Length: 93
Image 1 (cartoon, rainbow, N blue to C red):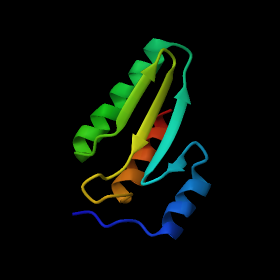
Image 2: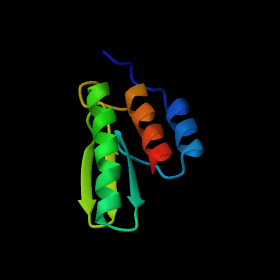
Image 3: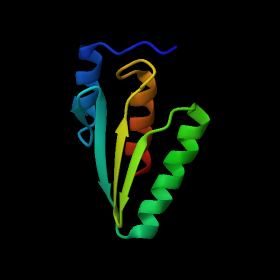
């Protein structure tokens, strides 16, 4: 089981990762790419990482925009798994 993050840790993460915003018990980011192929490539990379982590985001693809919503549903909020995956997404975007 993963431990829920304290508010201070969440706020620190959000101040360091401007692409992410808090949405209740989740963090959300939208990335924009040149075209659908780039967006799909990004999603594939995120999917491979998520599968290795066994931590799967909600993903919405709209032509060249990808929105990710991260939360550890089993814990009812945000855990280190969410911030780790979010950081990975920022790095590969």
